[in-house]
Amino acid sequence: MAIKVIGFDADDTLWINENYFREGEKKFCALMHAYLSEEKTMTLLYDNEMNTLDIYGFGIKGFVLSMIETASQIMKTELDNITIDSIVTIGKEMLHKPVELFEGVEQTLQALQHSYRLIVVTKGDLLDQERKLEKSGITHYFHHVEVMSNKHEADYLKLIKHLDIDPSSFLMVGNSLRSDILPVTKIGGKAVYVPYDITWQHETVDTHDLHEIEYATIDKLPDLINLL
Amino acid sequence: MAIKVIGFDADDTLWINENYFREGEKKFCALMHAYLSEEKTMTLLYDNEMNTLDIYGFGIKGFVLSMIETASQIMKTELDNITIDSIVTIGKEMLHKPVELFEGVEQTLQALQHSYRLIVVTKGDLLDQERKLEKSGITHYFHHVEVMSNKHEADYLKLIKHLDIDPSSFLMVGNSLRSDILPVTKIGGKAVYVPYDITWQHETVDTHDLHEIEYATIDKLPDLINLL
Image (cartoon, rainbow over the protein chains, first blue to last red):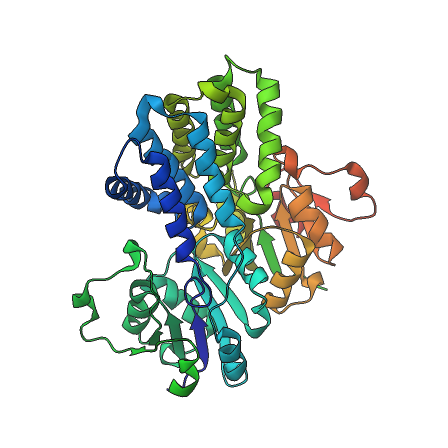
């Protein structure tokens, strides 16, 4: 069936995001440096993030709360107000970062806006995603913005139902095999993968899971125009 | 125009919520007790919540981050890991609270579900609101659930546009004059106020703002059936 709706992931597909988390982690590891190695700090932090993912969800606030928990585990009775303030500041700085669009994003949206219904399909913190969209200056290209708490098959099925289209008329474009490509192909939709240099450990997939699923890969977003 | 869609606020309209924040605040004040009076602690906490509302938004995670910031300001160099852990625990406990529906909620939804399109219109943390809805066991009464980052006139206008109805066919039911009643009446919708015993300071309004706006007040949700 012909594609009617194109869903764009936002973080690391339309704009830079993961770099800011990496920066935050670097700063956090520097704070823990006297107590634990960077490698072990990162492992502990990731474990704490995974243990709270079901209650905190994705986004900066949960990340900050996980850093605070990790700092307490690492520093124990040596935890002090300066460390806590520094962690809170890391989060606030992240929440004030500029939104830097990838090259060719506007050109791509412009080229496609009249032939397809373009939507944003993103997960994470509602307010923070709205902040980034507003700062991005590209909201007028989109018919609809969907912020989901997660990107599982069931979430996409709900979206497709809401859009009132056949799954095969839906194309998802994103940088996460786990969140943008796999679940969409599994429910009968189409998917285009635009890898980004940095991928959060949680978003990686077992290559085994990619057997028998079909999707296109492009180097950069504007390649989507020719592909379609 | 006849009412077609009824929007229900969730927190403190369908189920208990504010009590859990009050409980959390009490526990926090107890932690600060040796350093600052409850009254001053509460003032400082509220100021911190208001100062970060634009970046953290509504919800438990932002509340926890504000308690942490407040504890650091109050305890300064005496801030310790036990206090930090206790604050993090307050938040986690809140995120695991059961969902306690108010009396007559199901009966009300049951009575209205065939004559109106019922929706949930709530603000706050996306994941946490979804968690509560799921736990509530009443999602099947609702055609649609809208979690907004805020409940200003512009947010309701967007919702009404999305619902593809005239504002005058929309009725909002909720416990917050500021978030559920005022903005809806201002954009030409109808509103029914169901006061709850406890209202967060932020949700109160200047009585002056209530002049010249029309809304009904009911004691408890089931009174809505007779009112309509």
